[in-house]
Length: 266
Image (cartoon, rainbow, N blue to C red):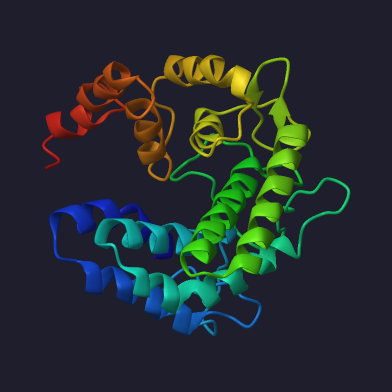
């Protein structure tokens, strides 16, 4: 699974000699890339079998974040050089789908969207999903940095412009100015911790509202599931809320890592 490999990248990268394993994940999915630039959700894949003919837009975007993590963990510039074209092909698929009236990437009705997993509380009923648009923004921002490292000035400027335009659209249409939180999807007032965590982590929240938003995140305890719990901990540890992060880790009641340890899950 492309997303699962990305979620395990820190554990593999910091505890094991895993450069070749992680590089192979990108290489495999690059080999499996479809003509439109998207990826199958697993590799090896068999699109002739209904259990494998599944498309998950959010999974595609983990190609960029995994590539970026490998570069940072190992200082591996060749991983950027060898996977940059595939990443660009994928992200252009989503940029080309942007709705002109809102400036947002629309929800695909033919594909399976996963904002968090399993059993997410995040609302998926709108035409434009906030987590998906935030992840597209993050992937585009990563490609701007990669283009800069690789000396591709025109690409860098293009991706920076696209990221800025998408950021403006996210704040305009998916941020509740009154409540000072991100809504889960277009035309809903529902808001979930995971959505706000990504908005905070990716620098999408208006500067004057950052303190208010992180206070809201802290009050929610731990609502994030498997996909977004690492993002939650990063936001807390990297923004002066270490005490709250340790409380989540040590909590022996559900949810929390302490709960899993107390049940013998080693």
